[in-house]
Every structure is written in C-alpha cells, then in structure tokens.
Length: 234
Ligand SMILES: C[S@@+](CC[C@H](N)C(=O)[O-])C[C@H]1O[C@@H](n2cnc3c(N)ncnc32)[C@H](O)[C@@H]1O
Image (tube, rainbow, N blue to C red):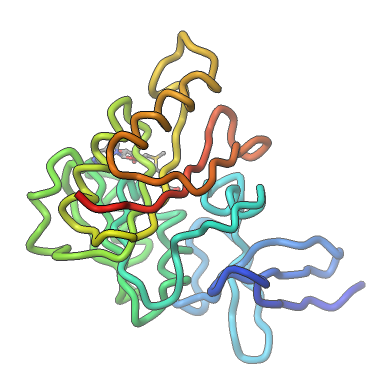
C-alpha cells in the first residue's frame, strides 16, 4: 500500500493534489472546518493539516480544473460573488480556497437549498455570507456585497449571460476575472450544444467580457462548458 500524500497544484494557489493509498490522484482543498465533511467527501490528514478530496462529478469547478483550465478566478484572500450556490457543494471548496481572509457571497433563490447551505457550512466557516435572493435583481443585495473581486456563476438559466453582466456591472472593477458554467440544455434543447455555446459566448463578448478559455466538462458533466473571462468594465 502506498502512503497518502498531498502536494500544492503547480499553477493554482489554494488547490492541491492528494495521492491516496491505492495510487489514485485527486484534487483537494485545505479544510477550513477541520473534522467536517460537507457532502461525504473523503478527508485526508497530513502533518496536522486536513484536506478535503474534491469530486469533479459533484463540482463543475473541479471538473474544469481537471479538464485543464489554468484560468481559475478563485484564489486565496479574494471576495467571490457566487451566483447559484445551491446547497453549497462547490461553495465549500471555494470557501476553503479563499480562506479566512476571503469571502464568499452566496446568492441562491431556492429556500430549501439555502437552508441546507446554512446548516452545512455556516456553523464552522466564517467567510460565507448566505443571500436568499434572485440573481436577476443584483441591486437587492448591495447592502451585503458592496464589492467583489470575482464572480462564479452557475445558475443554469437561459438569460444567464445577461444576469452575469448585470451583476458584474454592479459589483466588479474593470479587469476582474470571472467564471461561468453554461449548460446547453438550459438554454436551448433544440440546438446542438456547440451552437448554443457559440451563441452564448458571442453574447458575452458583446457585454464587456473578454473570453480567456472555454473548456467542455465531459466526462464529468454532459453538455456543459466552463468559460473563464475578464470583465472589461461598463
Ligand atoms: C446547477 S445548480 C448550482 C450548483 C452549485 N453551483 C454547485 O456546484 O454546488 C443551480 C442553482 O442556481 C439556482 N438559481 C437559478 N436561477 C437563479 C437565480 N436567478 N437567482 C438565484 N439562484 C438561482 C438554482 O436554484 C440552483 O440551486
């Protein structure tokens, strides 16, 4: 049996590689709430630190990293506006990455998902700010958010490019980096996914975003891409 070890990712600060006893290699993040597993993920303890194995089948951000994107806009110490937080699976890893000096503003309009997020995450993580609201109306959470360094958007809505742009106009400074997950079936089930992605990416280009990379998330998620962009300002 091999020994378990953890190494920092060579390019992405706050992200790690964990090698397990069977030789398999997995993404991981440093657990900000030691002793607690959020969605059944494995915890790995090494030299008094605890890491959480990050499942790419449960988190599109992990899938994007494994599919080779080097354009990850989440890093230690930043404030992230997270649109579509659901019950907090990916949020928990974003919270690990930004760490105690960062913040994750979580916008979610489904009250049940938000309740789970609060139960799962808010007890042991002080960098999470739950916002039960609709991302289509970004001005409504200005009292809590005030400003952000990056946006991560995973709302699976047909008009998500516009929603993202409206949030960016209100909360980001020019040259901020952001990420958007696009699910072709949420936008148009009649068109082939590649056409849907092209159309969405053209729309983003018209709304002050400079596209840095687009990665397809198969085999972890079907008909999804992760787009990394720079916001060029209003
Ligand atoms: C695909 S799930 C997000 C999964 C989550 N990002 C993760 O990786 O753990 C999409 C979520 O976006 C939420 N959502 C969709 N439209 C929204 C809107 N306009 N405002 C806020 N939340 C929204 C849905 O309720 C759902 O929980």
